[in-house]
Image 1 (tube, rainbow over the protein chains, first blue to last red):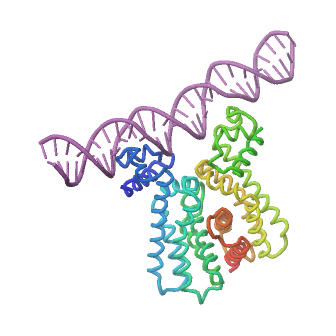
Image 2 (image 1 turned 135 degrees about the horizontal axis):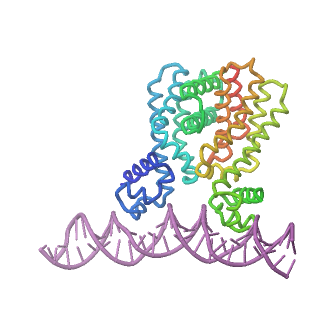
Length: 185
Length: 185
DNA sequence: CCTGAATATGAGCAAGGTTCAGTTAAGGAG
DNA sequence: CTCCTTAACTGAACCTTGCTCATATTCAGG
């Protein structure tokens, strides 16, 4: 049931935007009544948080796949895989991500948001440590922090951004180059 | 009067958070009635947009000052100035910026947001072009795009972020190093 | 003093998040 | 088959909040 509600919210956000994502619409799409929503979630924000968690799980999964596929290959290949996986995960459904970035900051409390990000941070840090010898950065935690936010921000700006944003392919190249030079000098 | 309203909203956001920033509270703080708000702004989103514009004007001003102070000095010094100015502009009032990042995405339409950012993008691009000879990046527009979003995202994550974020000083060092290596190889 | 145009007011409307008293459905026990 | 209990569901009603508009106030120029 929880899954049904999250899926319904996901679809409303993706197809009708965050303004249409009110509790009545979500309940209607899920085929239940408003009251039932509150049997499984304490409030609307919790529903949005669940959708956000699902989104981050997808991104984390895409990253894990990219890391696995590039295991043993040079750092540069790994970085390109990381950036590409992130971009692809967002290009898959731009409308949903536009809606999420608009609605999430106000709906999900910062602490919850922090926990959601921690998983990706840990994954990234672990991956970095595998290349430790060739890295010139000392503190892997800070490095992972900076890289994570760089990728997330630029990908979002490229996918969601208004007006003339650079081509995704070109952005991927630049971000990958930036990370490589940062890590290895 | 417009300035009074923006200032009142600024203060409510900074001192009471975005949840308290409803039209009644803003009018009360501005010493006027709700109706008068709507004589100067078409809706609440426009008020938030004005506050956001003011914030970006401050950031742009801080950047301009940093660029002016480091004119003629090596690129590395300029980059450090840029990053430091951004960090300082946000450390000045963390609560306000936490509230702004939460409320802005949903309140200000993407196109308006794009226009607000364009000023900083242009400024950054112009500054980069002064060092063109020593840069290994080809497309200054894309470079400015990536650098802008890197700085903005990491600064926000450091200032607003929940939980254990790295020290601002250390983040500044890492971001500055990242940008320098990206631009000059 | 008038007058009327510009501005200010705040009760009230509409929309959306939330609640809860009443209803239905499911699973025994007799 | 009927009754009872418990759990889940329902949706009308409530409350907050963005916004409107009929009314009130101000004030410059006759």
